[in-house]
Length: 590
Image (cartoon, rainbow, N blue to C red; front, side, top):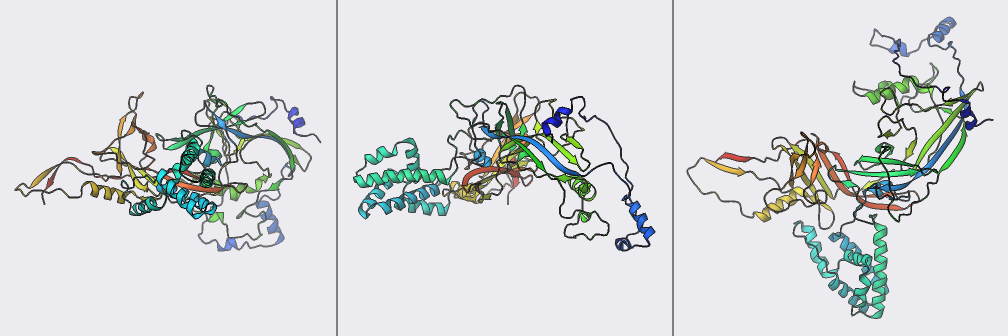
């Protein structure tokens, strides 16, 4: 039996069917019921045999088609894996699907807050307590408390629980996070050797430091270099490039320009095939092989079936649990209407062929040959052929190409993305909202990371800071004046202003620049902690606002390994707001 390669040779480029632009109209006859009571129609009453024949003729059961049912499908495809990842396209690094792509993109260094210091210190103390006698353990603990004293300022947060834990840690524990940093820098062993501890204690402290470093590395997924951060503060989203390479060393660049929703899928990427776009490997980086695999398979196609699908026979009873005829759709619910129309009218025209794709691969279906019951073999061409920008082309699962006038790409991409994710309560939440009366944007830190690493209320923290700065309210002297002049009203401490400024290179466009209110620096979190001048593009804060959350995330990857990392996500905001900021006001004296 000839396979796909032989079938493809039969069709020359001139003989292959092409999609030509045309405008075609269709008419469909539909019943127009004159009564609101359908009980008699739903009874499906029958009459004599002639009536049954007329009913069959009415439903088109006597109409024959010169078409055969498919009985066999031959598929030829090739797949190759992602093997590169780049934030800067001039320094691509190796990538393997041993780590989820979300974790690889979002991960950031774990901060050395008080909670992390205590957790790591307790781990090291448990190791030393098991390995050392009581005298040596007490000496090692005292030396660690003196050499790595807990040094973190909790006064700026005014968080009672953090203050209590800080006071306890000063007496009982030490900074375990600093121990890990010295281990990574190679300075820990030298400090231990210079300590007055016994030889046995010195050996165990060194061993415990090594075990602590491995524990911290396994506990959190962090970037090897803190500068490898895909988060773009001016866009409030992640931007990165992944690449797949075939056996001919041709790279397919997959550019994710607007990833901020917390879950990656194939539609998060575009194929970056601009003529001047290149991807250069980082010097000395060992890139894994492309690992291209060609697959030839034969399948027995099966008709599409799903819950609520209309049955082919008129008098056959259907399950009412899924009722597409009862769908309520508005005129703007185009996707819902398309789905309903497919389910009720065209669903029995489709057959399904199971073809499993491996995670993290780009698959190119080279050809599909269908054999019907009459023995005819038909070469199936991809749907949606033509230029990627053609308005008459329709596709659903294809990636967009960035080059102008480029042909559409029909490859299937299955990214190594997380299926299920556990997410902690936000340790930081910043609400970007528009204040039209003040003609600016405010970044409201509604949740802030405490010294313990947990999220606390930014509004309560702002109120405490205001009380600390102004413990005594201003005193107004009694006068005969009935009005008073107010230079400017106050704004809560957790409201950070962003003012519109001119965008260079444009005559009319603006961007948002972080400003400051009178006094010192007010922002406390990581989202707004960027060197000045800090800009945010105006289109990133729509009228509905934008909400940026930062939280711990955990998932279990295939193979059973778990990954924990800190990541950000951007959500739709809660609308406009008003800070109450006003200048040069005349108030009535009360």
